[in-house]
Length: 417
Image (cartoon, rainbow, N blue to C red; front, top):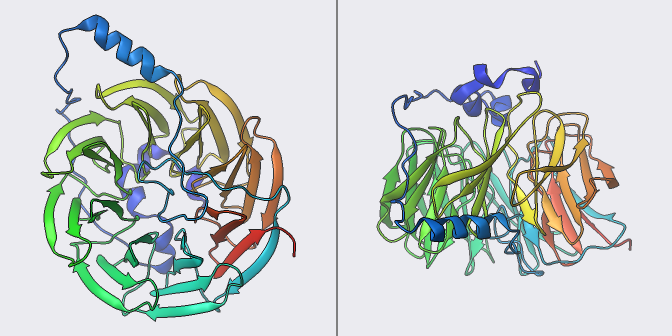
């Protein structure tokens, strides 16, 4: 049965637990806690209404997105603000430079690329370090765990990655040796985020953990009412988590206490992206939100035409917000207003999160293809057929794009050699 044909109103939170890793027959059971009587918690309103209106007007104007540096892609969305945009330059025509194939293997995690090393974990409990130039295996860690869906994060010589059993590993990036482990209550589905030497990671046990990056010691934890399946997104003194409880949570980075929330109408595992005063996130109910996080207010929404869920984390750059849907579309919206700019039709649903590089956007799809589109028009510029479903997202550094697929291949694309 093709999941993209199921009504999201029937899917609800349960469907989010039955993500692509259920192909491994690892069903996850949990109780969905419904907050029927709780509305939006608004940050205390300002008494100066003209100033408030001016702030919202400024937020509606396109602002420059933070971009990952050209020489590294340290985490799932490239930046701690989740923008999925890169400062790198890719060749006009991409060719396959190398392919690493794992027999009977499968990948869903997005790679991290730092100092010429490609770090990518698989669904069979292994973590690989590959040479960016050649694809040569530098080291391989075989764990006792069932596998990894979460993307790795690399910071100050260590790799942080969580597995399906809820174990967060800290590895030496040069050797793959385990430095420490931290055990969460349930599965870890998304990449960790780093703040002032602390590792922030969410779990299906509904808890956001803050852990010392050097020692693995817990600093604080914050629990919501249902699973956390996104990467935490940072701005200023707060961290944002979009939860399966149907709320966007704003949490103090210092204390771990909640300082605000916005209702988003349904569960989600999408990693929010933040540019200026606006935060962008989609949900299982097929609604995409532009939220003024300073005002804790929804500025605009966009509805998936077929009512299909949105599991693709957005990329933001140059006034455009771009994401995929399970309704087989890639969508570009105006950053400030949510007005639709263009759509592109794939053959199957899209869970892969796009990456914006210059005036191009790259992402994978359930039809086994990797697409390169014109970010301004949505016109297809390039595609590559992998033969396997592509749930992972691209990782991009200067001259190279790396992406994996469900049939055990990690591919690197760049200039023809």
